Every structure is written in C-alpha cells, then in structure tokens.
Length: 185
Image 1 (cartoon, rainbow, N blue to C red):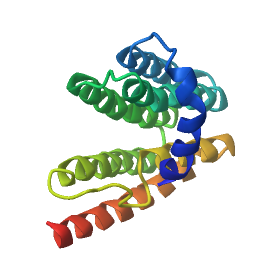
Image 2: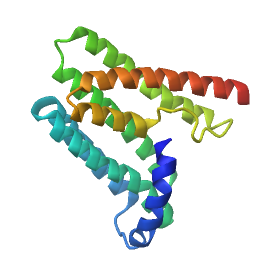
Image 3: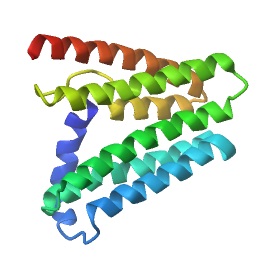
C-alpha cells in the first residue's frame, strides 16, 4: 500500500543512477539479507534501536534489487524466487529476535508465533491469488507496512505492542485477501 505512493517517485529519481550500477540484483538481495541477519542479532542481543536502524538500512537493498533488475534488464525467475524466499526468512528473523529477547514472556511468544503465521499468510495469499486475479494493492498490511510499523513501535520502546498491531493488521489483511480472491476467481 505504502509502496505505491513511495516507489514511483523514488524510481524516477534513481533510475538514471541505477543504469550505472554494475552489481547484480541477486547480489543486492543477498547483501540485504545479510544485513537482516545482523539487524536481527542486534535486536536480540545488543540494542533494539540499533537493530531497527540496521534493518531499516537493509530495506533499501530490498527495494533496489528489483529496481536494478528491471532498469538494467536483468530480471530472472531465479532472482524473483530468491528475493521472495529471503524476504520470508528475513521477516521470520525479526520475530525470532524479538521472541528470543523477550523469551520469558510466554504470552508474547504465542502472539509472536501467530504474527509470523499471519504475516506469511498475507504473502502466501498474494502469491497464490496472483495465479487467478491481480492482487496489486489488495490489503492494508503488506510487508512494507508490517516492517515500518514494527520499526516505529520498536523505536518508541514498544516492540511488543508493535507485534500485537502487526498481528491484528495481518489477520485483517488475510481476511481482505481471502474475500477478494473468493469474489474474483
């Protein structure tokens, strides 16, 4: 949802620069994933704020890998699968880091587990739904929104509340997408 308002203006500014980028889109994907690992570790062991800043920086790689691929005619089926696969692992790492950090809070562990489940379900419904109908901008809690909200709540010192909000938004989006698919296939 947010991406549709942010991505196009950013793309216009960056396309001339990106045409000069010589690094492969898949390398950008892997670099972003490695930064996610570091960010998740920071969230778990060192500092939630520092971890969120690293994770935010890693999101730029996630945005630019596809733009580099499209701009430089380097899209590939493997790149698309790699990006999607590493996105799912990266998402899980964030929740796992928070779960490890707050491992003594059983209710938080349960809520986080459901947040992972429903976050993945949002992505899964989009992937499966795309086989039958356009899923572009269907649902309010896409990956970008989930990550931004988790980051904001973490920076405000309320990471647990962020997970609760993401869970509720993800459940709502799963319902939105399920109803949309049912009505349009």
